Amino acid sequence: MLNIIHQKKFEKMPLSITIASGKGGVGKSIIVANIAYLLSSQGLKTLIWDADSFFPNQHLIFGIEPPLRLSQVYAGQISVNDAITKVKENLFMLADSPASGNFIKNSPTPILDLYHELLLEQDFDVILFDTPAGAADQLLQCIKISDIVAVMVTDEPTSLLDAYGLIKIFLKFIKKDKINLLVNNVIDYEDADEVSNKLNSATQKFLGFQLKQLGFIPYDRLVRLSIQKQEILAEKNPDADIVKYLRNLTDNIVKLTLNLN
Image (cartoon, rainbow, N blue to C red; front, side):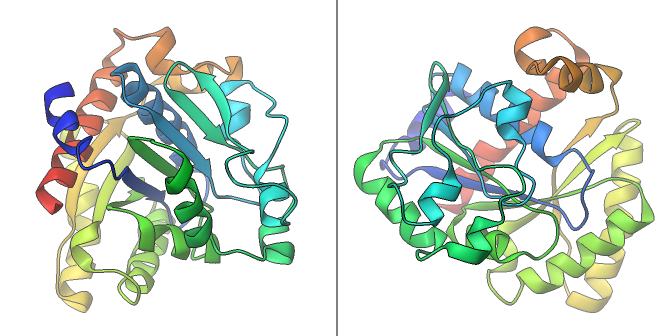
Protein backbone atom coordinates (compact mmCIF):
# COMPACT_ATOMS: atom_id res chain seq x y z
CA MET A 1 0.00 0.00 0.00
CA LEU A 2 2.88 2.40 0.71
CA ASN A 3 3.94 2.65 -2.95
CA ILE A 4 0.38 3.45 -4.00
CA ILE A 5 -0.16 6.03 -1.28
CA HIS A 6 3.12 7.84 -1.78
CA GLN A 7 2.18 8.55 -5.38
CA LYS A 8 -0.57 10.76 -3.93
CA LYS A 9 1.58 12.05 -1.07
CA PHE A 10 2.35 13.23 -3.72
CA GLU A 11 0.99 16.58 -4.71
CA LYS A 12 0.94 17.63 -1.06
CA MET A 13 -2.81 17.90 -0.93
CA PRO A 14 -4.22 15.57 1.70
CA LEU A 15 -6.44 12.68 0.80
CA SER A 16 -9.78 13.68 2.37
CA ILE A 17 -12.38 11.05 3.25
CA THR A 18 -15.84 11.42 4.78
CA ILE A 19 -17.49 8.42 6.42
CA ALA A 20 -21.24 9.00 6.61
CA SER A 21 -24.40 7.13 7.57
CA GLY A 22 -28.11 7.74 7.37
CA LYS A 23 -28.68 6.45 10.89
CA GLY A 24 -26.60 6.16 14.03
CA GLY A 25 -25.28 2.97 15.57
CA VAL A 26 -23.89 1.39 12.40
CA GLY A 27 -20.25 1.38 13.58
CA LYS A 28 -19.03 4.41 11.67
CA SER A 29 -16.75 5.90 14.31
CA ILE A 30 -14.95 2.67 15.21
CA ILE A 31 -14.23 2.01 11.52
CA VAL A 32 -12.87 5.56 11.11
CA ALA A 33 -10.58 5.07 14.11
CA ASN A 34 -9.18 1.80 12.78
CA ILE A 35 -8.69 3.10 9.23
CA ALA A 36 -6.86 6.11 10.64
CA TYR A 37 -4.62 3.91 12.74
CA LEU A 38 -3.78 1.65 9.78
CA LEU A 39 -2.93 4.62 7.57
CA SER A 40 -0.75 6.19 10.24
CA SER A 41 1.03 2.89 10.87
CA GLN A 42 2.06 2.97 7.18
CA GLY A 43 3.95 6.19 7.84
CA LEU A 44 1.23 8.56 6.64
CA LYS A 45 0.53 11.65 8.71
CA THR A 46 -3.18 11.18 9.42
CA LEU A 47 -5.76 13.46 11.02
CA ILE A 48 -9.13 12.41 12.41
CA TRP A 49 -11.56 15.34 12.32
CA ASP A 50 -14.52 14.53 14.56
CA ALA A 51 -17.21 16.65 12.93
CA ASP A 52 -20.04 15.51 15.21
CA SER A 53 -20.51 18.44 17.58
CA PHE A 54 -23.32 16.79 19.52
CA PHE A 55 -22.02 13.27 20.13
CA PRO A 56 -18.30 13.19 19.29
CA ASN A 57 -16.64 9.97 20.41
CA GLN A 58 -13.30 9.60 18.63
CA HIS A 59 -11.44 10.76 21.75
CA LEU A 60 -13.38 8.18 23.78
CA ILE A 61 -12.49 5.38 21.35
CA PHE A 62 -8.81 6.22 21.75
CA GLY A 63 -9.13 6.78 25.49
CA ILE A 64 -7.70 10.32 25.48
CA GLU A 65 -8.79 13.72 26.80
CA PRO A 66 -7.60 16.44 24.40
CA PRO A 67 -6.97 19.73 26.26
CA LEU A 68 -8.36 21.87 23.43
CA ARG A 69 -11.51 21.08 21.46
CA LEU A 70 -13.24 21.97 18.22
CA SER A 71 -16.04 23.62 20.18
CA GLN A 72 -13.49 26.32 21.06
CA VAL A 73 -12.49 26.62 17.40
CA TYR A 74 -16.11 26.95 16.27
CA ALA A 75 -16.65 29.61 18.92
CA GLY A 76 -13.68 31.60 17.57
CA GLN A 77 -11.64 31.22 20.77
CA ILE A 78 -8.65 29.37 19.29
CA SER A 79 -7.35 28.45 15.83
CA VAL A 80 -7.97 25.06 14.28
CA ASN A 81 -4.23 24.36 14.41
CA ASP A 82 -4.17 24.97 18.17
CA ALA A 83 -6.82 22.28 18.68
CA ILE A 84 -4.83 19.46 17.07
CA THR A 85 -3.90 16.69 19.52
CA LYS A 86 -1.26 14.06 18.84
CA VAL A 87 -2.69 10.59 19.52
CA LYS A 88 0.11 8.31 18.33
CA GLU A 89 3.03 8.45 15.94
CA ASN A 90 1.72 9.99 12.69
CA LEU A 91 -1.83 10.08 14.09
CA PHE A 92 -3.57 13.29 15.18
CA MET A 93 -7.08 14.34 16.14
CA LEU A 94 -9.43 17.30 16.16
CA ALA A 95 -11.86 16.35 18.92
CA ASP A 96 -15.03 18.11 20.01
CA SER A 97 -16.71 18.41 23.40
CA PRO A 98 -19.49 15.85 24.01
CA ALA A 99 -23.00 17.17 23.47
CA SER A 100 -21.75 20.74 23.04
CA GLY A 101 -23.63 21.54 19.84
CA ASN A 102 -21.39 24.58 19.57
CA PHE A 103 -20.99 24.21 15.84
CA ILE A 104 -24.67 24.96 15.38
CA LYS A 105 -24.87 27.75 17.91
CA ASN A 106 -21.61 29.61 17.72
CA SER A 107 -19.55 28.80 14.65
CA PRO A 108 -18.43 31.99 12.89
CA THR A 109 -16.39 30.01 10.34
CA PRO A 110 -17.51 27.23 7.99
CA ILE A 111 -15.63 23.93 8.04
CA LEU A 112 -14.30 24.69 4.55
CA ASP A 113 -12.56 27.83 5.80
CA LEU A 114 -11.11 25.95 8.77
CA TYR A 115 -9.94 23.26 6.38
CA HIS A 116 -8.12 25.83 4.25
CA GLU A 117 -6.56 27.32 7.38
CA LEU A 118 -5.37 23.85 8.32
CA LEU A 119 -3.77 23.30 4.91
CA LEU A 120 -1.75 26.49 5.20
CA GLU A 121 0.05 25.35 8.36
CA GLN A 122 -0.08 21.55 8.33
CA ASP A 123 1.15 18.80 6.01
CA PHE A 124 -1.24 15.92 6.62
CA ASP A 125 -1.32 13.12 4.09
CA VAL A 126 -4.83 11.96 5.03
CA ILE A 127 -7.78 13.67 6.72
CA LEU A 128 -10.70 11.49 7.86
CA PHE A 129 -14.00 13.17 8.72
CA ASP A 130 -16.17 11.31 11.23
CA THR A 131 -19.59 12.88 10.83
CA PRO A 132 -22.98 12.92 12.56
CA ALA A 133 -25.66 10.56 11.31
CA GLY A 134 -28.21 12.04 8.95
CA ALA A 135 -27.97 15.13 6.77
CA ALA A 136 -26.49 17.50 9.33
CA ASP A 137 -24.88 20.72 8.12
CA GLN A 138 -21.44 19.53 9.31
CA LEU A 139 -21.75 16.45 7.12
CA LEU A 140 -22.79 18.40 4.03
CA GLN A 141 -19.78 20.68 4.43
CA CYS A 142 -17.44 17.72 4.85
CA ILE A 143 -18.59 15.90 1.71
CA LYS A 144 -17.81 18.96 -0.43
CA ILE A 145 -14.20 18.85 0.76
CA SER A 146 -13.68 15.12 0.43
CA ASP A 147 -12.16 13.04 -2.35
CA ILE A 148 -14.21 10.05 -1.20
CA VAL A 149 -17.59 9.84 0.54
CA ALA A 150 -18.32 6.41 2.00
CA VAL A 151 -21.91 5.76 3.06
CA MET A 152 -21.96 3.04 5.70
CA VAL A 153 -24.88 0.64 5.94
CA THR A 154 -25.79 -2.56 7.75
CA ASP A 155 -28.38 -5.17 6.80
CA GLU A 156 -31.08 -3.45 8.88
CA PRO A 157 -33.99 -2.13 6.77
CA THR A 158 -33.88 1.25 8.51
CA SER A 159 -30.18 1.58 7.72
CA LEU A 160 -30.83 0.97 4.02
CA LEU A 161 -33.79 3.35 3.89
CA ASP A 162 -31.91 6.13 5.64
CA ALA A 163 -28.84 5.57 3.44
CA TYR A 164 -30.96 5.95 0.31
CA GLY A 165 -32.41 9.21 1.61
CA LEU A 166 -28.94 10.50 2.46
CA ILE A 167 -27.55 9.62 -0.98
CA LYS A 168 -30.44 11.45 -2.63
CA ILE A 169 -29.52 14.57 -0.64
CA PHE A 170 -25.81 14.18 -1.44
CA LEU A 171 -26.52 14.36 -5.17
CA LYS A 172 -27.55 18.00 -4.69
CA PHE A 173 -24.05 18.85 -3.46
CA ILE A 174 -21.51 16.46 -5.01
CA LYS A 175 -21.02 14.30 -8.07
CA LYS A 176 -22.26 10.74 -7.83
CA ASP A 177 -18.76 9.38 -8.61
CA LYS A 178 -17.62 10.47 -5.16
CA ILE A 179 -20.20 8.35 -3.37
CA ASN A 180 -19.36 4.78 -2.42
CA LEU A 181 -20.95 2.10 -0.28
CA LEU A 182 -19.39 0.59 2.83
CA VAL A 183 -21.18 -2.42 4.34
CA ASN A 184 -20.59 -3.18 8.00
CA ASN A 185 -21.45 -5.92 10.46
CA VAL A 186 -22.41 -8.64 7.98
CA ILE A 187 -21.72 -12.38 7.93
CA ASP A 188 -19.62 -12.70 4.76
CA TYR A 189 -19.14 -11.32 1.26
CA GLU A 190 -22.40 -12.88 0.04
CA ASP A 191 -24.29 -11.11 2.82
CA ALA A 192 -22.49 -7.86 1.94
CA ASP A 193 -23.41 -8.24 -1.74
CA GLU A 194 -27.03 -8.84 -0.82
CA VAL A 195 -27.10 -5.62 1.20
CA SER A 196 -25.44 -3.71 -1.66
CA ASN A 197 -27.89 -5.13 -4.20
CA LYS A 198 -30.89 -4.09 -2.12
CA LEU A 199 -29.72 -0.49 -1.95
CA ASN A 200 -28.56 -0.38 -5.56
CA SER A 201 -31.89 -1.62 -6.84
CA ALA A 202 -33.41 1.53 -5.35
CA THR A 203 -30.68 3.92 -6.48
CA GLN A 204 -30.77 2.50 -10.01
CA LYS A 205 -34.54 2.72 -10.28
CA PHE A 206 -35.03 6.17 -8.77
CA LEU A 207 -31.66 7.93 -9.08
CA GLY A 208 -30.29 6.31 -12.23
CA PHE A 209 -27.02 4.91 -10.95
CA GLN A 210 -25.49 2.22 -8.76
CA LEU A 211 -22.95 2.70 -6.02
CA LYS A 212 -19.60 0.94 -5.99
CA GLN A 213 -18.99 -1.16 -2.91
CA LEU A 214 -15.85 0.20 -1.28
CA GLY A 215 -15.60 -2.81 0.99
CA PHE A 216 -17.29 -4.67 3.80
CA ILE A 217 -16.51 -5.47 7.40
CA PRO A 218 -17.81 -8.72 8.92
CA TYR A 219 -19.27 -9.03 12.39
CA ASP A 220 -16.67 -9.80 15.04
CA ARG A 221 -17.13 -9.72 18.82
CA LEU A 222 -13.62 -8.28 19.08
CA VAL A 223 -15.08 -4.95 17.95
CA ARG A 224 -17.28 -4.67 21.04
CA LEU A 225 -14.40 -5.71 23.29
CA SER A 226 -12.11 -3.08 21.77
CA ILE A 227 -14.73 -0.39 22.40
CA GLN A 228 -15.18 -1.46 26.01
CA LYS A 229 -11.42 -1.43 26.60
CA GLN A 230 -10.89 1.81 24.62
CA GLU A 231 -8.38 0.02 22.43
CA ILE A 232 -7.83 0.19 18.69
CA LEU A 233 -8.59 -3.23 17.30
CA ALA A 234 -6.07 -3.02 14.45
CA GLU A 235 -3.35 -2.18 16.95
CA LYS A 236 -4.12 -4.68 19.70
CA ASN A 237 -5.18 -7.61 17.46
CA PRO A 238 -3.28 -7.08 14.19
CA ASP A 239 -3.65 -10.73 13.14
CA ALA A 240 -7.41 -10.94 13.69
CA ASP A 241 -9.52 -11.83 10.64
CA ILE A 242 -11.50 -8.59 10.87
CA VAL A 243 -8.30 -6.56 10.69
CA LYS A 244 -7.53 -8.16 7.32
CA TYR A 245 -10.83 -6.75 6.04
CA LEU A 246 -9.97 -3.35 7.51
CA ARG A 247 -6.64 -3.42 5.68
CA ASN A 248 -8.39 -4.33 2.43
CA LEU A 249 -10.80 -1.45 2.94
CA THR A 250 -7.91 0.94 3.53
CA ASP A 251 -6.20 -0.24 0.34
CA ASN A 252 -9.42 0.17 -1.65
CA ILE A 253 -9.85 3.74 -0.40
CA VAL A 254 -6.38 4.72 -1.53
CA LYS A 255 -6.63 3.02 -4.91
CA LEU A 256 -10.00 4.65 -5.59
CA THR A 257 -8.63 8.09 -4.75
CA LEU A 258 -5.77 7.66 -7.19
CA ASN A 259 -8.27 6.79 -9.91
CA LEU A 260 -10.26 9.93 -9.16
CA ASN A 261 -7.24 12.22 -9.53
